[in-house]
Length: 171
Image 1 (cartoon, rainbow, N blue to C red):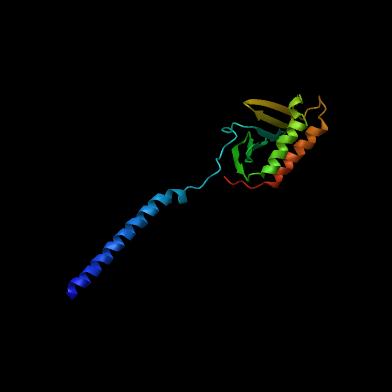
Image 2 (cartoon, helix red, strand yellow):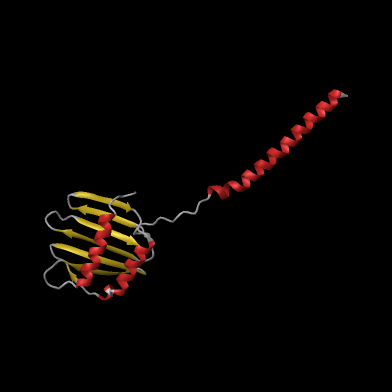
């Protein structure tokens, strides 16, 4: 009788462990997808982004080098550099804070830069492009034919300072 009692205890213990393991497996299978899923910010490029983009840069001169930057409405920032003698280089930079991005796009609108008509590139030139709903408003200067508004120079200076502060490429 003693043997059957011990066998029954061992058998009951194994039966109990089986259900605990089965329960644990079911819990793990159902919760694993939720644990492994992390909300990620979608990554865009200036070519794939469909909202507003401010692009700016400078170029020309003896070397013909062109440096350009793009700030996407979601805060992503990109750098691109090219010259006639070398291939294109660049990539994604550190993202800007939301409040900085909001202020930049608000400033572009409030300064009425979309109403600025200036297409006077010279040997050394600068530009600001504003893309919205597939339309691009382009402002270029550097030639000697037209006077550049102070608000445009100031806005470009702010953009350049942000680019200089944000030197590191992350991708």
